[in-house]
Image 1 (cartoon, helix red, strand yellow):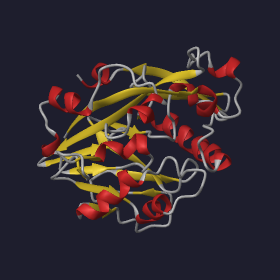
Image 2 (cartoon, rainbow, N blue to C red; image 1 turned 30 degrees about the vertical axis):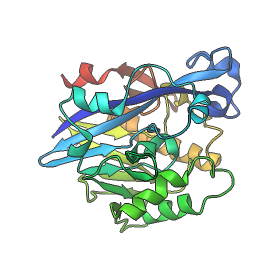
Image 3 (tube, one colour; image 1 turned 180 degrees about the horizontal axis):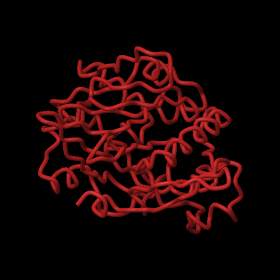
Image 4 (spheres, helix red, strand yellow; image 1 turned 45 degrees about the horizontal axis):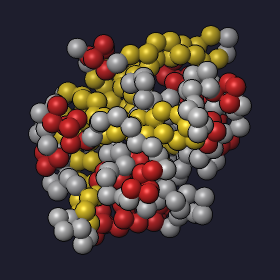
Length: 287
């Protein structure tokens, strides 16, 4: 097995929304805001090469929305999923599976693209299966008013229409499922959105956890630092507390999807609190 970080693009979001009730004087120390109160964020995917299988975890925003849409997010840098795959010797057509932690547009928008004459949409990964779970799919396709702006029909319906949509077989009622169709363990969490999936991957003697929106950046490690976007913030608190203690105890390596300046971090516990232990680039650990 080989893992590759895939940088799909950087963007910005309002810092207040990203940290909820936490005052700016606190979160601005770790995630400094610009003159419009926006903080730097990444859309970082992870590619797993395992035998004949190439599994891509999340796909970023994609590029099919309007300039007005992307203007809200102040895209910056020169990353793209195409360039990042090419850097590691791959093409979109090589991808066999796309695993979506959840279906918010910044996590799955890259799954679907315009067709050649822009008269309709098509899968951006024509040879891949797109994986979600039934509970979250229903949540996303029948959205509540709070999340409706994050679940875009042009991202979701073409997946179903393509015949490439598949559901992870969630056979247990617990929040942690050992093994899956894709060969890694999955933690199910419900605070940010219903049935978000957090992959746990055993790689070179280490447990790599793809954090998605359970832990967006290292600045979100303190328990009360919960996004305003979360649908059930009190549940996020409980889920974070349980996971962070487990991660610190077991020396998990946390792969950060949204931290523009830290790819991976580890945690340590002291005085009943969990703190940042170290921050790394992917290459520092695995090359």
